[in-house]
Structure formats: structure tokens, C-alpha cells
Image (cartoon, rainbow, N blue to C red; front, top):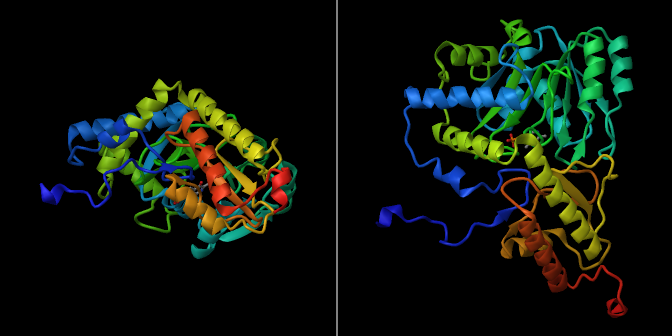
Length: 385
Ligand SMILES: *Cc1c(COP(=O)(O)O)cnc(C)c1O
């Protein structure tokens, strides 16, 4: 039937080596082939099961913690936390070593929230001792925020050691674990995290449409009257979900069905540990292959996570990132298009429904594209041309 015809070519989708949206499984896409009413009991049961599974993924109990689902992309979840959980006269300390830390500062500034910033180079992790010192010096600071995996570079920040400092000083702790949750183990109790945010379309391998906040109930219940937004009011969203299992406003029903399937696939893969093993293997395969082609990573391996890897632009007159990106795209591989980092780097994500064979396919395409661009990085006698 003509009205059913897709505007996309009937070919295999490109493989996404980005930080999201990501390549998803067929079953995740198939789970969306239903129109469910938002007050349907089957839908309410799915939402309940999703919330329960998310709390378990954070290694917490539903007695002390809760998962709040929030419509919109990941940034909406961050904005929900910042706008709802900083007291009206509070002050937010943000630890910044990349674009996503800077975005938290920007959100707070738009909201008119007083901020303090500890800034680091993009290849350096924040120092928990600096946090300790600043919290001692500035009693006005009520909340502290940090990004777990800074997707700008792929650096993994020490959220547990920072959490210990925040906890010693009795402040509220928020972690943006957007690009790590579900694949990098995170124990919210051990890290003393009050609020952690991630979204449907990163390591859990669902489709875009909502974010989720895992909150310590006691902290959340103490925030009444602080929200600076109606639609992003975290406490009100929580109370709606608790009262009747429903969202206050139209829920992303199809994205939630996909996410439920994605959570089952995560469990079938062996949970966070199983997913971590696949992503780590993807990362190591990529790095070994890229090094063999003459590329060099930006980060020190001790700080490097297995979510996304930054590589320096090669030092060769024929290398042009725009062209490199476009040619890889025409080979069916999408790497991260934007340059967010301060350094002359590009990034390749290795999360989503991708496996070693996909990484090897990408590496073969990189080799071909370098040849097409006449970029010879591996010094051979023929390269002097
Ligand atoms: C992807 C990402 C975000 C933003 O998510 P959107 O879904 O694009 O709004 C925020 N923080 C980190 C660390 C991310 O990786």
C-alpha cells in the first residue's frame, strides 16, 4: 500500500558509532509496533517494571530509592534535577572537564541558580581533594554535580571518591551518568549519590524519548516547593507515578515499550557486567585497530572509559575530518560528527547493539577511506610521494 511506503531506502541502516541515538536490536524496534493507551493496565504494569529494574541497576532498593521517568531527551532529565533539587537560595558546585559539565553550568545559569565551578582540562579528572577544600571554604554550596563518563572525550570521572567528599560535608550529590549507566557499574549507596540521571537511548539500548532519574527518596521528599518548572518538576512527576502509575502528561508509550524490551535484553546479556564486557571488547578492538592504522588516542589509558574513544586528527596534509566523516558515512558507518572537545580530536562511540564484527567492519572502512583520501599514516617506503 502506497501510504505505508517508507521514505527511507529499503536497505540496511548505517551502523551508529556515536554516543546516541544508537543502533538498537530488531526486537527493540519491533516492540514499538503497538498502540497502547497511557491508562491501560498493561502499560502501567510495564512502567512499574521499568522503574523497578532501574533501581536494581543502580544497586539500590525500592525502599530507599525510586526511579522517576521524565519525558524528553537526557538534558531534560538533568534540567529536572537541577531545577527541582537545588534549594531556592541554594548554590550548585559543578565539576567541569568537558562539554556536558559545561552544559550543567549553563542550565543552572538559565535558571538563575548561584553556581561555583571547578574546571579541569578535558584530559584530566576532577580532584576529590579540590572538592573537599572548596566545600570547607564555601558553606553556601548546597549541591554538587559531576558527569560520570564525560562523553566529550570518553574520560571516566571518579564519582565515588567525589561522593565521599560531598557526603562528609553533608551536601546533595548529583551525577550525570547519561552515557555510562547500565554499562559501567555504579552503586548509588557506595558513591553517596542522591540523584543520578541517564536516558533511554544510551547504554540500555532503547530508543530516544525519555530520561530517568534514580533518586534517594528521603532527599527527593525534602525538595517540596523548590521546583522552578511545571513540566520538569521532579517531585510532582514522582508523586504522579507513585499515586496511579501514570505520567502527568502524555508519556512516550512506544519508547517505553522499546525500553522494556531493551532492559530484558540487558538482563539476558548478564546485566551491567555482561554489557561492560562487550563494550570493553569493542573498545579494545577499536583501539588496537586504529593504532595499527596510525591513529593515536587522546586520553591516557588509565582515565579512558570503554564508552567512547577520542583520537587525534592525524598529522597529514591530506586529512580533512569533514571528508573522512562523509566517506565513512557512504561506507555505512556513522562516527561522531561534531567536534565538542578543545583538542583536535574526533570520537568513535562503541556502545549500542554493536559487536566485534561491526568494529572490524568500521576498521576496514577507515583503512579504505584513508586510501581514498591518500592519507598514508603508517610509514612505508611508498609514503614519501
Ligand atoms: C548524551 C549526553 C547528554 C545529553 O543527552 P541528550 O539526550 O542529548 O539531551 C548529557 N550528558 C552526557 C554525559 C551525555 O553523554
